[in-house]
Image 1 (cartoon, rainbow, N blue to C red):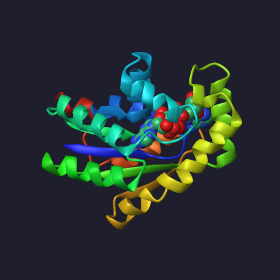
Image 2 (image 1 turned 60 degrees about the horizontal axis):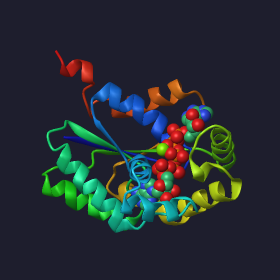
Image 3 (image 1 turned 60 degrees about the vertical axis):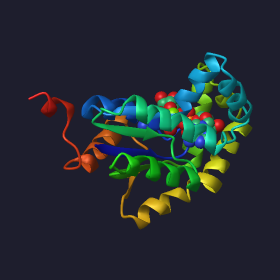
Image 4 (image 1 turned 135 degrees about the vertical axis):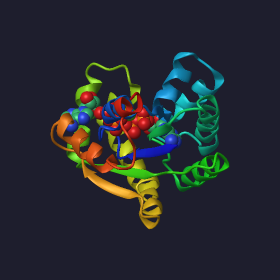
Length: 199
Ligand code: AP5
Ligand code: MG
């Protein structure tokens, strides 16, 4: 298995680049944000609880997201590997992920961290907020709160992976295709692309 984490602040392009990476490399895309929004749309108890946090730009409690990841890993046990997007976001989540993967005799291969300035992030998310139905994109103070939560609770997780020599920082500004090229170059040698797989 090859397991990759796409790391970065809100609006850095994790979702955009994940779609391209999973298509190229045949990985299963696990976005905790998308999974939580599906729970909200289905009006499950988990979704209703999560919505209170997400609407304010706060993190959903660790045990909720770790539980979701656990069941997704089980569901896709036969996959070639996973691309984690928006997870882990706290030290406790990073440790739980290591434990879950080691039970499956696997681990994290690489952490790619997208770097984008705060002003560019706010600009992107306000723009998306004009048309999307994401409640956390609608006003600047919620967007800035998401960024502040990222700085305080999530950014320190990068050093956990840097210590394990797994972290690579990639410039997340510029064209989507150029950023994808830089991400792909970093994954070169780490993982065969899905087209090779079919040969
Ligand atoms: P989540 O859904 O993960 O959102 P996020 O991290 O805030 O980030 P986004 O999804 O908004 O941005 P992105 O980095 O995916 O960028 P995107 O490609 O969309 O989390 C939402 C909430 O759920 C959290 O606040 C929390 O409450 C909860 N949650 C989720 N995971 C959790 C966890 N593990 N623990 C606890 N709570 C959790 O791009 C953004 C915009 O920019 C788009 O409009 C896109 O078109 C545009 N764009 C992309 N690339 C470029 C580019 N190169 N140039 C210009 N524009 C670009
Ligand atoms: Mg996203």
